[in-house]
Figure 1 (tube, one colour):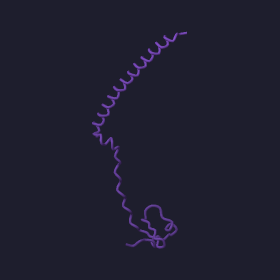
Figure 2 (figure 1 turned 120 degrees about the vertical axis):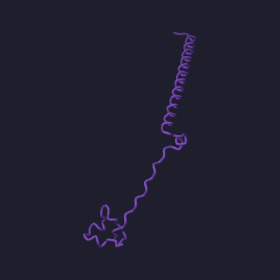
Figure 3 (figure 1 turned 90 degrees about the horizontal axis):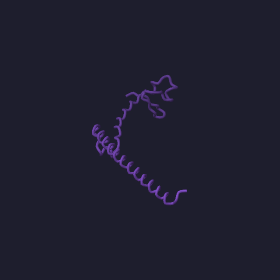
Figure 4 (figure 1 turned 30 degrees about the horizontal axis):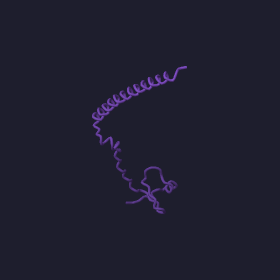
Length: 106
């Protein structure tokens, strides 16, 4: 069985090795960070990106202009519902063969 002094010495050696390893890791991380920052700056320059754009975040695409509503061509005289004549026929027209009686004359 090892005596207490030998164990303390081994512990000190291991702690020193651990400190060296942690220092080496830190040095490598700092060097890698410098390379990453340089790469980011290069990409920012290539794409003409400013720091303000990074802070603000991506721009939202412009909204599409609202579509013009189609003119009313048919009106239900009972309810006032309207239909432009495009798309599926509404129920109040679908049962009638003569849809001209619903036509709006302008």
